[in-house]
Length: 318
Image 1 (cartoon, rainbow, N blue to C red):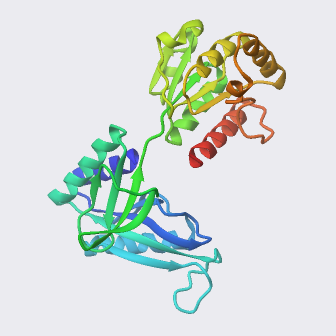
Image 2: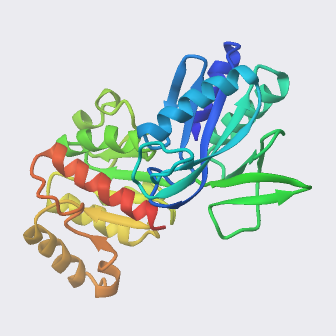
Image 3: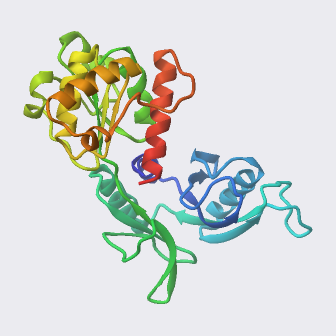
């Protein structure tokens, strides 16, 4: 959300109108589900994707036209062979796509500025986009167990989506794997904080995408870091002694995700040590080790991909 509205705000300040293109509903097999966003301007696609292929191409053309017309539009795309509006796609579903016009007027500028402020503060909120003409808005709460829905308010139909922010990712260890992992996770909208006890591995220039880089004492992590239930802990230190310290700390927190890199042999050494200290099997079962999906990864870059994939999976299932 932050990057999406940063770009819209930038275009607004440059006096450029935009079309916010959003998949709001769908059935069957479609390229992207509800909540996929794309920005279209006079010049074509600016940012994001609603799934690629001919549907996205047609949506870009439609968006360019609607920017000129300066109004909203709800379009249904039929992604099965048909005689009415055949897109040449065989996905086997239908997608409803909303085109919301963001002009250069004061109301549009205020909406985009508010969205940017909320996104920057990482506050939970609901984005409400009118399905016909009308003004989009940001609200704090909607009584719904769904993350996105089509709803009615005061006679107006809206597409509403809940934007909630994941916690921070605390990465213990600043070596080669962390240096591969941080840019990848950051690109996937995870907020990374790197911590190590070695000065040479806590230089900010090693992790330009990280929110923070901390030099800590692994035997006293609690003095530097406070972890919340929505946070992630990734342990990729230089050896089993630091791993043990970091894992011990992690188990005393309510972190939603705890993962440790390493071989099964190293994992057993740490496991046995912590069991001997009094941790229960149930407590230790919170730890994912070896961390990452099993994709046959070997290099730091490949292992980073496997970790990122597992974290995407975990986030999607929350």
